[in-house]
Image 1 (cartoon, rainbow, N blue to C red):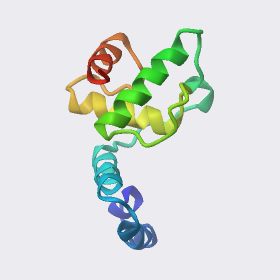
Image 2 (image 1 turned 135 degrees about the horizontal axis):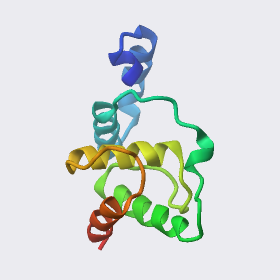
Image 3 (image 1 turned 60 degrees about the vertical axis):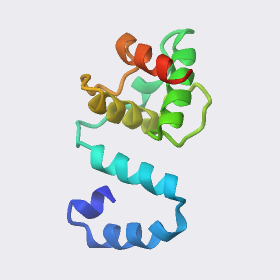
Image 4 (image 1 turned 45 degrees about the vertical axis):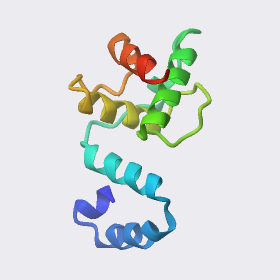
Length: 116
């Protein structure tokens, strides 16, 4: 959807062909994610790995809450991923927070309240 909106006719065609195969919830999440997408500098995958033992719990909390809120549709395994980072950034934008894509204390606090 993102590439299609950027002018790629093949991507637009393929995205439109997939739409009927998605559930209403998945379609809403895909639309929301594509709308929230903002191009950024490339992300180094290594920077997404947990840097301490407490981070995995933070990622798990984020995955759980973002899944419930419709921002994230990936595994709830406590592991950071590019999809999780995009979901966090979209949530942060919607909450008026700096859209870093990182699980910072302010974002985690809001997400922890949402996951209850």
